[in-house]
Length: 404
Image (cartoon, rainbow, N blue to C red):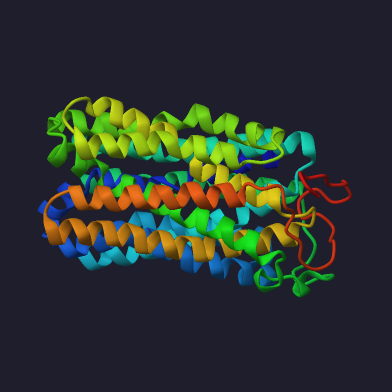
């Protein structure tokens, strides 16, 4: 029960640090004189940090264990969010970097923790995890402007440190209920991201996650500007449309793990989730002012694609928790590097052209790649690496997974 409560709360911490900054970025630039170039770096920095932190999480898990690594990451996250707003542009950037490194470690280890749950609890826990991930995006986008309008952007952006503190307390309780084996015990060290086979499936999932995340973070960072500048949406409506885009995917995200688990192949689901985004981007490109609310809805309906990519980490990995951890480290480490290049490229392309037509064309190409790699990653192929090990959080319980 402790893990069933702690995991969704941890997942809630994975997005507000990003979406909260996107909603107040214009206020930040006016208040501290941040340049357009530095603003683009702040938008893209989280994804690059997720890449570095994703790769780092595997080594930290082996060295210190999951329980201690997650606890320290939550402490770093809370401190970074609280102090990044007290100085100028570079302190804001530094705090964003450290916060997102901590988020990356959390995000990389969560699929491995979820993977160890018994089959019946796995579907529920995965659904709550994916839904909480999407809810964090929506809550960060909705609540931050409200707090900022009644106080300051500093308080709005830093208030999410309290959520990190709540996650730390919940994780401490979960740690007492489900002690893990000592770091480095058993055959754990013989499994790594470099030993995953078949490599083609692992890389297809990595590319799919990278392209999907790159699109998602580009929308998180730039959709308010697109609506304001491209679709001529009044400023007071932009925040609400942005929140709609973030919130609509939450109920779908609750169902995605069950849909994925019931299907032998997830290729069709990957295509179905990419389709609404393609329609929305085409609308913003061709008839932006015709129905901006419809384009926001389309973007929201496709947001759970990231949740599907995370779900497929568990579905593709064999029953060993170390295989899931290694696959998660590879997918999120390299995948977020691809996503970082995508988000930064979209921002720089807009800065160079001062229009949104070319960035939207680029996003359409990203969606085409997302669809193709999703079809490959969705094939029912099991990824294996190293020996079977005792599950991390639920010792002694036999594991069964799709394709295992």
